[in-house]
Image 1 (cartoon, rainbow over the protein chains, first blue to last red):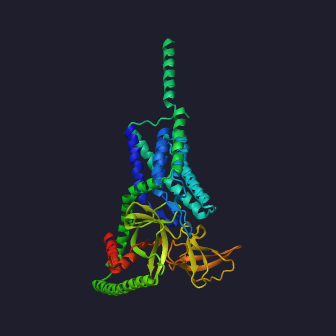
Image 2: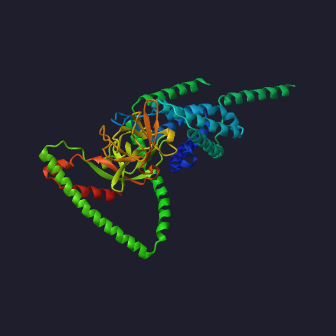
Image 3: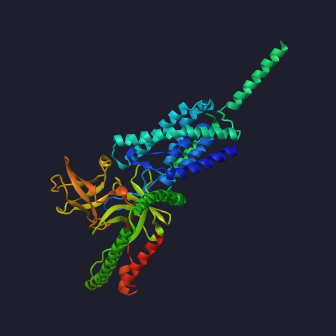
Length: 208
Length: 300
């Protein structure tokens, strides 16, 4: 388990490095490949709840540190104190909420099905980007939403979901490599009950 | 959900709220500087690709053509050196006259050459990362300009210092980069900023104009200098069309330079000591300017 988690941590750091090389595409409404988001979503599906929360904290913290831009709330005539339009920690919250939703898909991932996780990764990424945009507009005090922004959000989330199978597959392989079993909450209790039930039925059969 | 998970969720939420409430500017700056080497490497990779394209263009030129171009560049450099000497003389004369008249001194600016090393920032902002930071005397809100023939065009302002050798610049096309502007012919004043409505067309919006505005297309817009954030007289763009509203009017302005094609820019750094040094006789303006040029050239 420890080696598996260390490997996930290294992958997260590497994803941030690769993210730097991923450009925005002006021809596709400034959409971009959100590698960090895709990896986090895959981790959220493949790891238990406490680990997901820890990764939400680490990933969100690094994301805010790199991509939050403190703007001086300056007008044309004067500048004042620097402040973030999106509060520092918003990405942590956003990743945590996305992870919370994706935790519900762990049983399907355990059964080696990736269709539903991929669809949900797209949905939660789109929702988190939209929430980010809404907070930004709320801060600026005016609402504006164009087709270009809708495409930017949709295409970014689509790209995110398109690369997520690679990460899901990678995490599945790593789990096998490090002999980590993807367990669900209460799985050990369930296994103990099953074992006890088998023992009872075996002893009943012997008695018969 | 088990009790442990609920407890962990509670701790997680407390940490999130703590992060949101706590002033994290210093921490953010420190963490951002950790990403700096990666950002610069990524920028170099992009730059290498661009240079590859440029080299291909140069290889098409013959040796005689390259020699002719070299001679032209030498002539231009010599002419510019002569003009620089004249300019230095005028600056020192100006300083002496100001002192003689006890004239209120304007804040002079010093140019710091900077290259755009990355355009990658947050999804929702029009930003670029420059290879100059606090080590070069750059401060938040420093204006960023480009030379445009005989005029100087404003392209944005520094919004965040990322470590000692880089800074984030907010482009003029961003909604949050607001500039006090004046139209050349009519002297009508307004606030120029980016606008999400015309973002795809790359246009800027000159708002807060009177309803019965006399501005016409093709008139030039300059910084008014009001507020002291940006010096007056920097070119912003050309009026494209006027839109009359119920209460006021707005003009759509085409930026003076294509903002998405910028590569090399100048940051205006407040030059606090130069005039004082001239008066005190500590160093001549020629020396100060030469040292700045050398510093810039060396760093580049």
